Amino acid sequence: MLLAAWLALGYMLEVLPTHGHLQEVPQNSNSATPGESTQGRQLRQLRQADLWSVPAESAQAVGSQPCPAQFDRMNVADVAAGAKPYVFGGDQRPTCQACKSNNDRAQYCRYERFAEPPICPKYEQERLAQYFVKQALAGSQNAQGLLELTPCDFWPLIQGRSLWLFGDSITMEMFHGTTCFFYELWIDFQRQPVSKDQSVIDFLMKDSGLPPNWEPWCAVLPQNTRICHVRVNKADYFMKQLVPSLHRILEPHDLIILNFGLWYNDAPEFRQVMLDFEVSWREAQKKFPYLMAWRETSPQHFPLSEVGDFQGSWEPPHFPCKPVGGDESAIQLDPVTGHLSTLRPDLEGVLRGNSRNQASTPVIERLGIPIMPAWNQSVPLWFLHHHHHSSGSHLGYNNGDCTHHCQPGMYQTWLYQLHTTLAQLHAHKQAS
Image 1: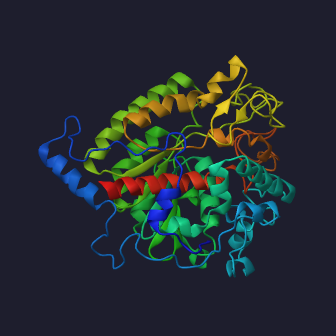
Image 2 (image 1 turned 180 degrees about the vertical axis):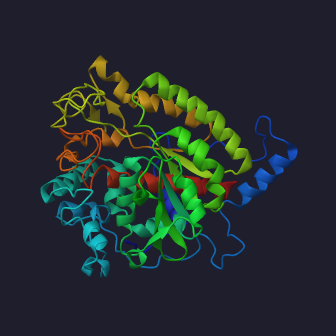
């Protein structure tokens, strides 16, 4: 866990650019939810007012404690000269402790040896860093922010809270990448159950279809701070099994990042899933107004589809993965605006996030939930799939996996957008 000289929150919010869907949530806690009783509205208002405050039993104010370590900030020139940025496993500056540890997790988080999930080879790690240097020098605020990001930038936003990542295997590996970003502060590399009550964990695992060794857990950071993952492959499991029990594992001020897109390959089915989710989430919010953001579904780079989507067959050839459209020139990412462009009409849907994001975005926006961008910046990262389950160990990907990425890769590149999303949530709650 890494963390450094931390910026005042006001400065952080001032310099954070707005990207994509990340806009302030148009929420009015005084307006009634359709069908909501006066008593229910009053209870919701009280809970909303407390979302960013301290639980009564806590001795430390949420978000008020200084960053517990120092991280000298790198700049783009440092990375261009060969320094490894913190997001990609760079050692804490000016000194580090976990970087000297022989703990398996510490060694993994330095991304210096092959492990599971597979570590990207050194030359690909260098290629990724220099790709973002090039983007930053071309004017990308996202790339510059990513390369200069320190764990202390997150601290006012997550200190005293649990950051919950709910989702499938992509979210699970985002969880690995996020916890590794903080590995200098990960207390004894301790895995903590999401609840001290085993019956709660048993209930969360019930009907999940997951093996026992995949039960949810948290990485423990200082000052009552945690980063947690709960495996959620499909919406039904989240809404019917998890949401009714979230109050048993979450505090009112905790934060949720959610996605369950990639398990749906049929576009009409996923559109209906999102409409059902909209109804269910509105009902859930009446009982407990969770602070949540939705992560965009990430792209795939399967060669049998012009848009990269998996085609529902495990027959060859599924490897090697290819850029969306077949070559790197087919889709262009503007480094300044962060927008995608193409000259090919058959790829126009890619510019709108493909069918999954086209189905989820209108629903999430109607719910007033912030959207964490993950699509645009991930489309060009087709080259980071190899070395991940390329031996055929992941489900049926017997000819290669063009969904998941080696690490550090796509998941780490989302950290700046995660930071921006949490900062905007915080800014909105402070204003209201």
